[in-house]
Length: 376
Ligand SMILES: Cc1ncc(COP(=O)(O)O)c(C=O)c1O
Image (tube, rainbow, N blue to C red):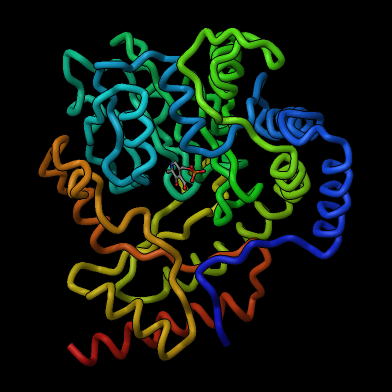
């Protein structure tokens, strides 16, 4: 059996619906920022219990727009070192300086302690990343710390469609949140992003920024340093149709995760990321921690070549403070992130994964661990 790292799930009915809508959109002449974009925004806001949502061209654009609305030019912005490069690129492009921080081994996210350790007199904002679809359960303490210090908390919710902590959705803990619809994400529009906020000013700024900083869609007066960050109607309808499946995807993914949990807990030599009580995760990533000493690339190779199982991408393989492009902003050592980035793996978990596939992954993992341990 072959189990791919990720699978994009659109049913035949979904594909037919999107194809019919695409035909209608092409005939209508309204190819961008039209009715499907408005519907996608309204439905996404509803699904996340949020007052406002603004659709944009990518998750990276969503982050940059939020950071521009906050105003981080020439200021420091705290970012966890184990995030996608896009988080720090957005800080750079908004004119800020990323300050890389360590993480909690419990949540793989910033904690109040690691956040505080990274603050400087020039800090203006903090970006908390809900890694793998897990909202850190100390997020309220981080929000309080930011409020006390006059800092703005922003959520990078690129992984966190539908996730909640204490009954509140991703997007409700900071000033605004950025979601991504890149194809590997739990909900995709092909490419795309969404800004979610309860702040009317951020909503209004986002509407300006995404369309070249124009004061109005049809006018030619530019009042912000904007960009071509619009969402096309073809992307919007794709996301709208996919979004309808979010509740069933969350349920399905949680069932697969529970199957993984029980088996991993019974395997020697493995730990896993535990979702805190009171949290709902979408299991965008299912994170497993082999004990130190196991060579990850050998495990990856063994799983692929002998068992047909492709591991999903890590979160992340190397921390950003060790990436060549961020050498100028090098921090460190950041020991928790360095250890966890170097050692964890992510099991494949699809929104339509069968029990047989999940069991094959688990069998492959225990077989591969056995043979690698015997080899060494
Ligand atoms: C944590 C994180 N932030 C930001 C992004 C950027 O999203 P996009 O690829 O839609 O620009 C991604 C996605 O790929 C991500 O994983």
